[in-house]
Length: 146
Image (cartoon, rainbow, N blue to C red; front, side, top):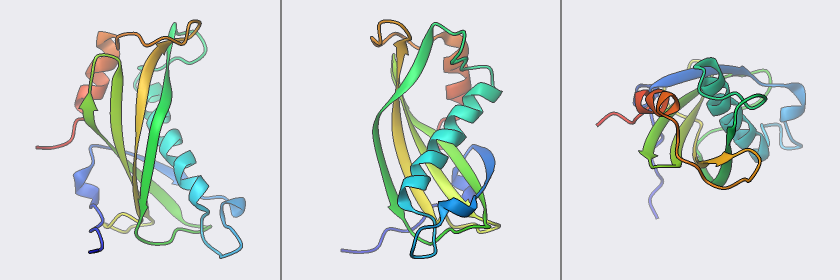
């Protein structure tokens, strides 16, 4: 099996900088794999909040994660600065698939690349609901470059 090639910063459309924390390191001296998923979630939801596309307190809908995955290429550890690149690769009626690249310090190659699928649901019923146009516009701007 050939080793996958990590993505580059230029492959992504929006960026969020996140500082690693002391407790992100595990006994092996690098960031534990669970933390990668926390960074994915923080980057995407932070971007949506910053763009006015998510109001998890007062909004009628929220996004729930229904699928995730990650490929690891290199280590990240405290006190690294991580830049999370975000892009949308699929946008449906009520769902969106994001890909996120985690870049260590000033690296151009991703240390890890993952994905997750959000489903837009009614906050009370937890049933899927169509993504509103203002949110869809934000997501369209994140679409992967052709």
